Image 1: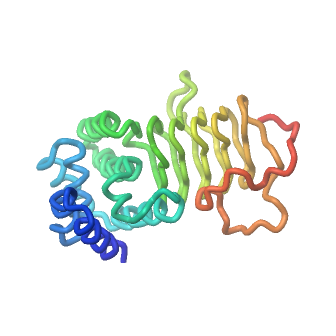
Image 2: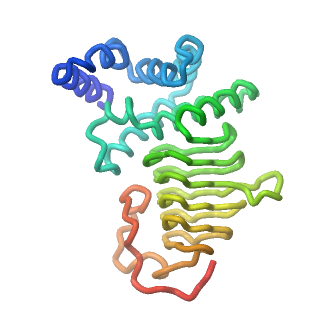
Length: 265
């Protein structure tokens, strides 16, 4: 159980580093559950301990799917990021993880027509974590925002399950379209640092977008797109590849690359 592991890690770290003992007690060890710990810590990070604590806890309590997504995101960070030394490390220190959890609450508020509060929360999260996700955006579970700084996800964007996104990624509009105008990211996609995906385009399940790429049209499932403008390289899935080995989970930036293609997307 993830919560049991988090508490064990916090006790170990409090014993090993007395300077952190009071912090670990306040954020983890004094709480009976993961939702309470997360709500307390996230509210304090956003500098509104009472108001946001009550809001976060009430929302997590009322929506089991959000609690399941919290665990899935913790598991994603722990399994995909070799720098993640433990679940408690992710819970307390990973701003990408914290920004995603705040977004989930803002998304619920948006659906409840509490839009001024949802937008205020989005703004505060952007100020504190440098992650700007519109509260209307739909984000799946098992998400890793690795490093997270500079990630922008627009209003009508959809991000599937088990997606990994590195820093300075934009899922934006073209600047002139209205309505449904942002990218749709399939399950298991890996988006490299600094990539820009613009417009109502589809990135197929298991695709990879290389670092610094600019993507303006659809990318097929299980393919790799790199460059500015982006082009496909190496064709689709390599022979013998495991269908379950999705780039968003494996964090493998280089498989499927066997030869350059002249096909420009």
